[in-house]
Length: 329
Image (cartoon, rainbow, N blue to C red; front, side, top):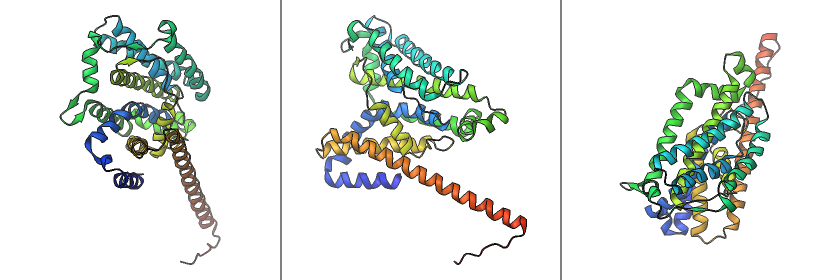
């Protein structure tokens, strides 16, 4: 991934001199901030062997609650809490149905994709976008979202903090160990004392929480709350996580790879725009990259299984006393 990222950056830098300028990289950061936040939750979910198809709808629904609260004069901290509460509640509903209720994750998140999208549209009469530009209670939130800390955009600082917290949770906590255990083998994890249903409920709840944070960033950047979910957002998020090396079967991956996947897709989309490639090709490029990434992952897993099988066969031959076949070097 890192080699591919360097190669792509080198190509676009040679093709378009403005690509490597800091203002352009700020554009990439702001454009990919929402996807980067959602990708943290998607990484947690994919590590358990599932997927959350409803992330874009949760983002839209939580964003509409935030916009409605600000429009009615709520102080921005209270409006933010309402947004986070709704997003977390949506995620918990997914997690409860998938974990304790044991309904397949694909069925649940496909169903709630439509339910949460309908919720976002029903919040306002006629599914109207809530314009927040000039709303007094929104001003501070907009400044926080679009401001900078020195040369760094605030959203970049937020994303870095979230990724660090997520990495610590995955690598150095019992909860993180449980996530990898459930993704590797849920039956074995249950036998070792891992509460599999609770872990599943927790990762989908986390995805909802992060969708609410992403909704705050999206609303702040656009100065409006829109009820329509971005149709390409879920694809972008899932593609970034899978391109970053997280196995779609669960149990293997991490947030460092996800971060590289987000940067990789952001660079691709930005470079295509700078080189005047039609935006209609951007979805095609992302889809092809996703298929290739998953395909290479399947080949890698297949190679590992073959290697493990050969090791097992060799050990059995050694124990039975059968002569080993010597392979020429």
